[in-house]
Image (tube, rainbow, N blue to C red; front, side):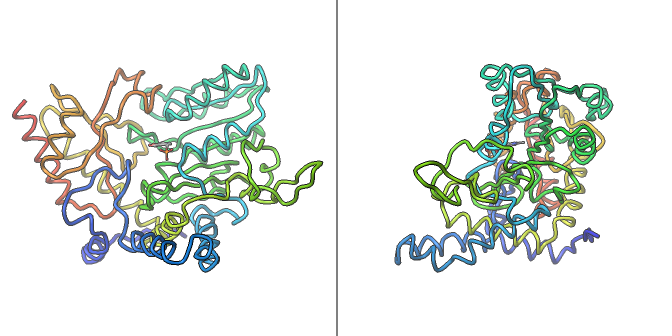
Length: 401
Ligand SMILES: Cc1ncc(COP(=O)(O)O)c(C=O)c1O
């Protein structure tokens, strides 16, 4: 049973005191990149210093176990085997390795949802052009929820892949990935989940989700350094994916006649990477597991719910998030003000928010005629006082429009 007990005020203060970034600013751009805990920063800096003093390969040998443990930590976070994950630089790379690894042929159908991220939409369009596939987008129903019956109706014998984004980039709604997984399994269709905004925010277990592949980043809700990400590929599916690029690390053996790929998911990654930030990723996952992702998720929902309620009371503000299950991403507009102007005005008051542009979640934004929205994304280290300060600032901005 996942621990979901609420945090005490003292715990939140302790967690904030372990994050130097919480002192100078109010950070509501966690969907862009969260503030890392100090231990994560220290792990990276220490490693880089050692590399400078002793040499990159020499330090790697010393940290062999700690680096190996990063795979085990990812596996613990998502409930997979250690041999089912690999470490890459970002979520787009992870997603691309999985998607472009699928052997697609003319007439094959890929099903997605209206919440899909831009990298993935580009991938679909590219595959349509190169392989003649068909892309079918399941629209959300009138209440903003993913339609499972529509998915069932859309699956046909030519459906090769279901690829969905659990949490979109520019709206607070979520897709029911475990229910979609049940349908994918029932029909024997490959299933790829973009969990970029999920990892570190929402508990995730790949076996409960029933996905074959899952991509994620470290820098968002996991609070890891930038330039970190990972890909999960179910053991039974690994041999079915084409390898897009390889180096000596991807293979188990080679002769002049041919090569044999490694027997684990690390065949999908390359040898050379920034091992300092990789250790930072491990430290961030360890920190999240110790805090408890179930507890994090509960607090994120409470804080985001509170932010939405308070923003709705501010004159001139429209909150755009739709659907029954909402996450820590809160999107809104201020009448008469451009989203970029809102972001800049808040930055002057030391409040970080971001702008969600139409192309990031193209299908959804086009459908709702949105060109951009203000995105304020909460994490568990944020507080009600910070939410109050944001809402007051937004109210005062509107009064000056
Ligand atoms: C839902 C979603 N998927 C994928 C990505 C791509 O992540 P990355 O920039 O790490 O490639 C993002 C980035 O914002 C995202 O929000």
